[in-house]
Image (tube, rainbow, N blue to C red; front, top):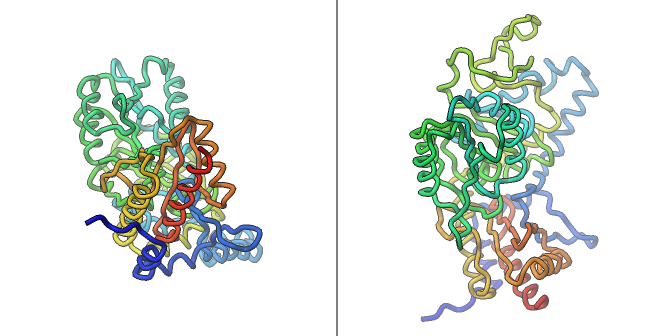
Length: 427
């Protein structure tokens, strides 16, 4: 029996049965000039604002006005230990010990700090392995680190691409290059979710292969935190970095995060770029000349965190705590399956770049538009003009993200309908 095409009523029935449907009302939905909500499917680039973030930021502004410098100790949330209450919640999201995480800086700054500590080229082991098509900022950081050490990126940067005719990189290909060239590789930097294709990787498998090859392993979790279930305590990379403005909904330029595995805490002489805020709390204000690192990941800080760019994260983490990653993941997969069936019915000519396997995808779908870049940009322009917010990546990919916190099954249905019309009207 052939199933009937999915309808708007089907989407609304799923929304009515969704136990997380009430969360949508706790986010600010971008609107048009008539006050109507846009179809927002761009949480992989910038998550929506938790409405409670306004009050969290206002509280810090009020305390700043009321207390000035005294707020470091006497604000309603004192500023010196400001992030201490957030670290257990972040640790839970990434699946590790509380002392293995710290909130600081921005993603690429944290990546540079970690590379300064963990990329130690010596002898023949000097190369860095990344994926071909890595997010530009990661690639820039890696190349500049190679050059900082006097190395030629043309010789010391290994970029692993997908097999010809494929879009995703298989874990066995990563393992293979680590077997073949492991003696040359000092460090592996790999994404949890590849930003362009939306492919989610088996991080434990990659970390094990890197360790077996004798390489340091670091993860960029920018597209993973708040999107995928993470268990860094099981995969045990040496370090990981992430931002919090995508799926963690902490706002543009919000504070980033960093993980350092506990096995490195007791290492004597671990290299780091030190700063005052990484000094142990007990003696920090004695202003001694000798640096004594704080225990754990906080010892890798260089500066105090920005209170105003951290406050919105408090509002977001409260919602995550209420929703729970298990329920969020279940809704992500349900939205993904629903969207997949809709696209198969309405746009069968399109082949998603994102893998179909459940474990290899999060809340993102990347679609290659046939007909070249000109037509692809035309389709994207049509969607933008019809108030669909997604994004375009050259030369031919549209990325959409169905975020379970605030996107609905009706959103997914409406996108599939808009895409069908866009393809037809731009032929």
